[in-house]
Length: 134
Image (cartoon, one colour):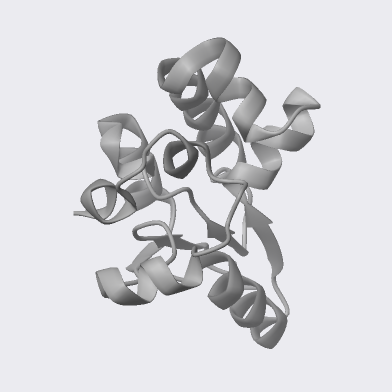
């Protein structure tokens, strides 16, 4: 029997990775994962706490571990965090273990989707959201 291939969704914050990923997984009969949600579940705290206590570097370390582990599964759809590609190790792992799909959105779309978002630590650390997305 042929193994189901993994699908990994990458792209900037607000591109729709989680929304598209859930819909895609449901239509394919695959299991869906969101790397940010997996990090929170394993840490027992939200991402803001991780960023406050460990900084972005601590978060990226956790992200590498989660990507490594989840990408070893078969037939999943994984929505990654917007900065996952900042770590070359993540890029290599994802490319080797499945199909990587880049979701694109205009800055205007991203800003509209995240207008009231209070759960994204990098957005909370800036007063200029548009500059962060450039």
